[in-house]
Length: 45
Image (tube, rainbow, N blue to C red):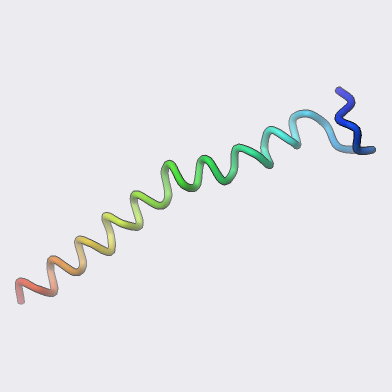
């Protein structure tokens, strides 16, 4: 499908836009759990 940029397909645009959404939805919460869990473990010692 034509996107206005030569050589760039609709699928490439979808991947470009979904990558930040996926990272903030799945990766960031897991990192927060990891950091908060480590802080809680350190405070109990």
